[in-house]
Structure formats: C-alpha cells, structure tokens
Length: 209
Image (cartoon, rainbow, N blue to C red; front, side, top):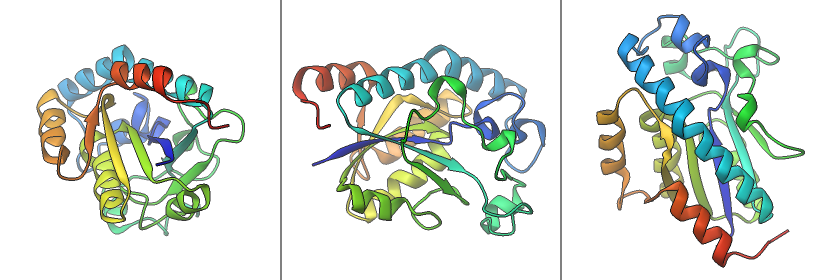
C-alpha cells in the first residue's frame, strides 16, 4: 500500500493563540484552561512530533499532504452549515489560512483546501489520493476529535487504511483525546505513536522517490 502523511488544520485559525477560533468566542470555543492545555501540548509535543514525521516522510520520498480550512470566497458563502454556525472563517490570503511555520509545506507538496470539518465531501482530496495511487493515510494535526476524526471516519468508509498518530494530534483536554482514540482504534483506524512510526520507517521503508 502506498502511504501518505496527512497534516490536518495546522494553520493559524486553529493552531495559534491569536487564531480566530480562540479569539472569536464562537460556538465550541475552548475555555481558558482548555486553551492552556491545548497550546502546551501543541508546543511541547505535537508540533515537534509532526516535524519529525514530516522530515522522515520527506527523506523517504513519501507524500506529505497539507489539509487546511479555507473558503474559496471572501465572504465564506461556500462554507458548510456548521462552519457558518460556528463562525469559522478562513479566506484566501488571510493570516488565518497561513500554515504554522514549523510544520508548513515544503516545495511542491500538495495543499488541499476544505470548507468543512472533514475534507472528503468538500475538497479535491480524494481525487489527489487517487491520482497519486495512495491507499494508506497517516493522520496528524488538530483537533483530534473534530477534523482529524472526521477525516479518519470518512477515509475508512471510502476504503482507505487510516492510521491515527496519537501523539501528533491535540484537542481541548486529555479526556477528550483519550475518548477519541478509544472511539476510533480498531473500528475506523489503527493507532500509532511518533517514535515507533519513525523507527519503522527508518528501518524498513526504502525511498519511493
């Protein structure tokens, strides 16, 4: 099976303290304690783990695909109903749509823009995966129990083999993180950790470039 690393919503909207999700006060926003937990986890473990993953995937010539929330229109009228209801808005050229520098795309890596939580129903992701011959999806990013979970569930239904890299994802609390992993593991995906996956890739996978 040909693999790819999916990096989900690693943009200012969701992964920066000044992102609109955290400053707008919309439906479902994190409270102060949740923000503290989330950004501590993000900075101390999740972003460094994603950097490690991106580095080894690139070294092995494996596709790294970046999925972000971004509307095609300035007023966001193409967003899904729930993104409108939650006032989640990221427009072309905006700071909200920009990737976090430490895990941003390199070179001509594929960027997929979605207008809802999961990308399969509202983006060109599936077409890209088909064109690239990819069937195994290693998933990292934010939020574990929202966009990451939506991506994994849909991927499983579409016949892909998703793998959740648990310590390369984050959400509002440890409890929500563990509950999400338990929901998905063995039903919609397999679960891996960064250290084991990196070691496996370094030891067993030859470059496919």
